[in-house]
Length: 229
Image (cartoon, rainbow, N blue to C red):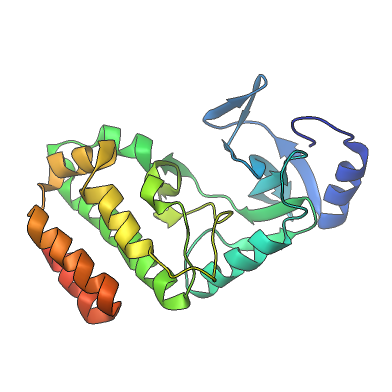
């Protein structure tokens, strides 16, 4: 409860006050001999129980520069109002309780794609971009979608996660960042391109510029047309 070190007593009491009844360890990330759902600069994410449901619990690191989780909770709430992100359940100074999403990180999921998975790949890309458009419209910039591999969970529903670097002060660049990450560069773009085919590069650059300038639904639809999703 106090990674990478510190007194856990007050944090256990804080968890009890929040309504968390249990914590379990499991997930794709190994941390000091324990498996967790994720680890970042601000916190560690583990499985937990609350109100008889499984949740994802983000625990503020003791060495984090953030004093509390209130800011991230507020940003996740903005995303939720736009219909994006894991549902915010509750929060306190050191903890953020969220909907638990079963699935794989998109960086792992794309490795399993084959020639027969074009529909699934296209639907996944479309869902991500639609959510990015909603975030752009809401004025919330995610901040990490250029490095999308760890920031989207693909499962029963495809969901953008991890809003710790988000901001309502920056000009939103969610659609352009995600589109470039998925279709223009890096391992994910190569994997997606192998299944969907590569969009014409100059047309894609033009569509991205057009959307960036206008940032409206017409520009977004033009981008989707170039991407064929």
